[in-house]
Length: 204
Image 1 (spheres, one colour):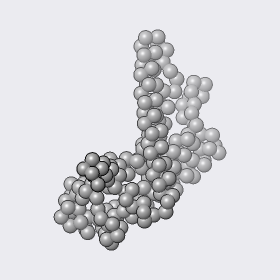
Image 2: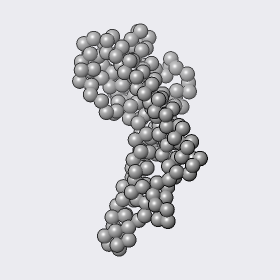
Image 3: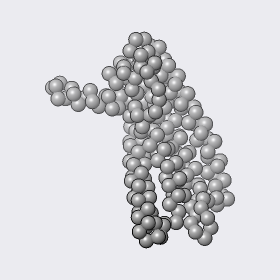
Image 4: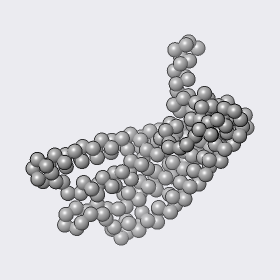
């Protein structure tokens, strides 16, 4: 392999080492990983949409004394949507918030222990997000059936169920991503595959 090709491969592993696990998992995982990218893209679009909406509201408020109704409510809904839409891709890309100084040291000094803990941590994340998804599902159904909304009648209202639906979907996808990462650590632990350079530095 040429030096250029090797550099490209190394960069790909650093960004997405979990793809190496795909050979040991059902082909559907590739579609799942594409889903996380699509969800992340939608989340990014929502961020720009909220920025444009808030900026326009400020301009109209101060220049024309005519603020937009519902900006506060839509921003609240949008923030929830962004968090749960982008969570899985952030985790998959190694950008999920965590304190990893001790964990990275373990991976470098005692790889077996590091990957064992990685398996346990990711399984814990998988179960926690699964519980969030299961706990939010009844709230979504109730909000749909009862017609719950945010805002003020006669001014601006927005239904609650889309927010709960995004929490359910986002939590479920993030739970599956934790499961994939747990499988990745476990395969390294039992010697089925080798850790990438990114993983040796503590990145997923």
